[in-house]
Image (cartoon, rainbow over all chains, first blue to last red; front, top):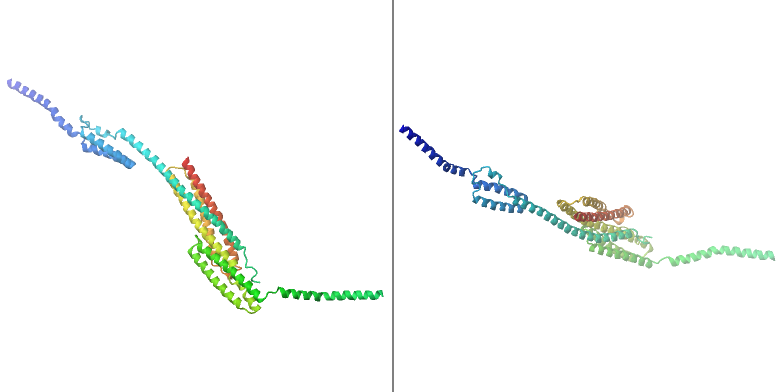
Length: 160
Length: 241
């Protein structure tokens, strides 16, 4: 009997001990399951690179912002509760997206303004060319008058 | 007595009538003798004609030399011809001055015109070469202006502007420029080879045709310029709207 009681008590003790130590064992496993900071950084960098490829210099600056934010995020525990789906929903911040759009539309307006200015410069050149053409045409008028006059001339009566 | 008087009157009248042709012939001979030029007068007139042509050649030489648009090749040909003509006219003047008979002068003097054709061939063809080369010069400037318009249109289209109207005017201008080039520019080559011996044909026809082609080129050039101005205005309109 005593042996049975002892066995039951030992079993209970073992179970209790196991229950007590289980959370401690589980915690390191969850930590290992968290997405590595490196992977998180890579996703944000890809996102930044995509924006950059659309906007040239502007995109590069956006990517730089994303990089710095990603670095900041990587310094702190991102998913302390061990939710593995969370990293997939970590986008470029909405504020960054709006900044990119504003910057792009500004660039387009600037391009149009620059093109218009270039066109006006070309039209100035054209005006100069047309003006000089006017002088040339006056000269051509004189040339044709000379042709007309010369064709009406004769050798005089020297042949007779 | 009356019959006698009548006979005398008739005889006088007949005599008078018969003497008239003789009087007229004498007067005619006298006039001919005074109007016929002497050998020296013929020589003077010939030298004046030569001098006039030499002056014309000097004027042509100056104009060709100073021309800003005539090609060097055409200048070379024309200036060479002028120099040859001046030399030939001077030599002919010497021959005329040395002539001693009317027969010699009747043979030499007409050569001032026939051998050189300064007024019927050399001067007109020089004018046409000059005008033709100017057409070539103008056409190049028109090309440059058209290229400028094309570049403005390209940039406008890149900026999203409606350049269709300007594009149509540019096409019209290009057509007119091409027409001016094909009609006016070849005239110089067509007439520059004409010589005194080509008068009256083919020189006369070639020179008249050259004149017509230059006039047509002149019209095309004006049209091209007007089209380019329209294209410019259309571009400005596109920018403002």
